[in-house]
Structure formats: structure tokens, C-alpha cells
Image 1 (cartoon, rainbow, N blue to C red):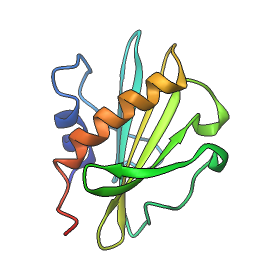
Image 2 (image 1 turned 120 degrees about the vertical axis):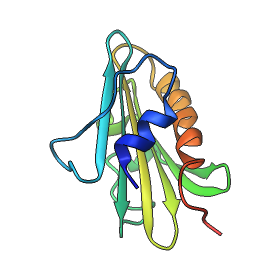
Image 3 (image 1 turned 180 degrees about the vertical axis):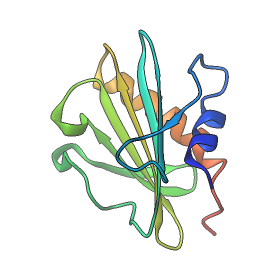
Image 4 (image 1 turned 30 degrees about the horizontal axis):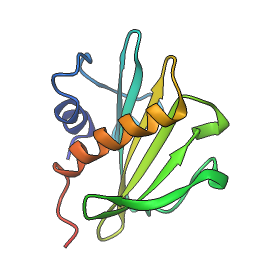
Length: 128
């Protein structure tokens, strides 16, 4: 599954340019930035558990995205205006949505990250 294709489908119609592979992990992660809004990225990590590798565990929130177990990480890297959602993709993988606003609150970033995560969820293989 292509992270760029999935991200572009999840945010279609929202004014973002096509996503591009990230420098850090070009085979698994893509991102795009909309001027005046901020950036959104998707990382599809095979073999990585959805409950691993968080930068701000003090605010971590366990929950679900539709029927998938997930963690919401507000204030990623201890900053404001950013949020990440890590969703379980069975048997042992995850989809990670990271959203950072150019200006705005962490609460708004998390609301937007949840919306993108719900759209990405529809594109992922079933967890059943």
C-alpha cells in the first residue's frame, strides 16, 4: 500500500498539493503542506506496534479510530499546534497520521488529525 496514494485520497478536496515521500523514510512515509494551514503526513509502518515510540507520553490518550485501537498524542514533540494518531493495523503494523498547524491550537490539530485518521482508516486493510 502506498502511503502517498492513501494520504492523497484521505485529504482529497481539501486544497492540499499532492503528497511527497519524506526524506527520513521515503518508502513508507509521505507528507504535504498547505500554505497558511500546515502539514499532514502519513507513515505506514510494517512491524511497528501502534502503541510504541511516542515523544510526549504524559498526554497520550488511548482510544479508537472507528473500530481500530489507536493512540492520540497531543502536542507532539512537546510543542503546540501538533497532533499524531497511531492506529493499529493487524497483525503487527501501524498507520501514523501526523498533523501540524502553521498557527492554531493543539486541540484543533488533534480534531483535524482525527478526521484524517478516519479517512485513512477506510483505506486500510480490515483489522478483523
